[in-house]
Length: 176
Image 1: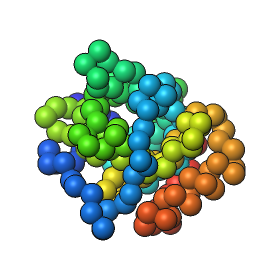
Image 2 (image 1 turned 90 degrees about the vertical axis):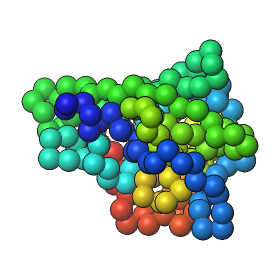
Image 3 (image 1 turned 30 degrees about the vertical axis):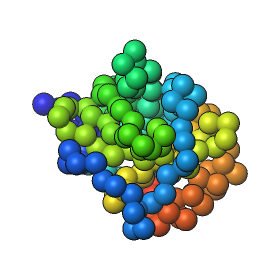
């Protein structure tokens, strides 16, 4: 049962796929999933119940994406629990698929089917060094980087994307 709270690492939305409109954040034009695959380090996030609660405080967070033969992505999210003695690693495994017509910029992620959450790529460095990911309701936001630590100039560029798309950056916390 302890894992259930963490298994929703990227959040769970309803099963309906929201359609972008004038009130939702814009995504990047396209994402090359082969280039996006691999490990990303979480640099900052909006607090989430499945990462931040009375028994869990995720630090040293990584997300690893692996292409599957069926065109979907295997997702492995991991973090050290700063509230537990010995800081054991916690892991959540899921699957993601691209929303049709989004050119891979809007993904649906599930850690327990049939429930899926929205994972929209809002900003992406041309060399895939950093990414800004959020939800269309602006309740979730993550800044990810290939490098640990992320260069300050890259972090500021990522923040500019989130700000431009209407995210309240006062909620953003750096990930230890």
